[in-house]
Image (tube, rainbow, N blue to C red; front, side, top):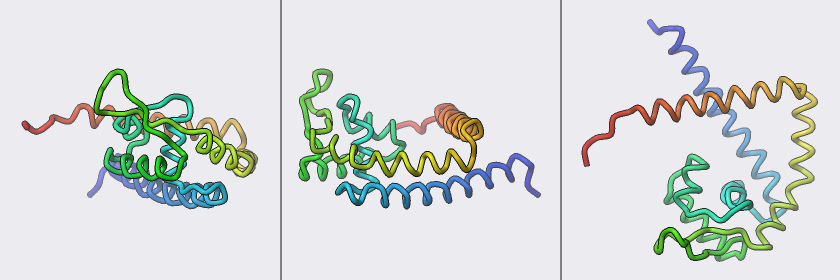
Length: 154
């Protein structure tokens, strides 16, 4: 017999998996015409405001460092990003968006604005904000639980 909390957790997880797939499909559709993939857009989006090391991007995005490294290398090869020296760490270079990378993300904006407006119209702005707040709170709670987990000895 499962507890109500187990049922809620399972439903939240399954719904999150479905949402992830839905968001990825939309992101691929939006990013493609700009010459990007959803994953490239995700990594570029993390460094639009300021350059970050690969590990910082991985933490912010909740993906593995190795995955970010592979994508960052591709973005650099395609001219959408560049590596810069990191004054805080000699070996961990910073990933920065280039003008071409910023322009590619700008090309996504009109379609991004359209789908955002359509979703906001369907949900209502207030309800949309409540949902985003709930998702953010859920993510923070999961981060806190993970931080409480004892680490195995190295």
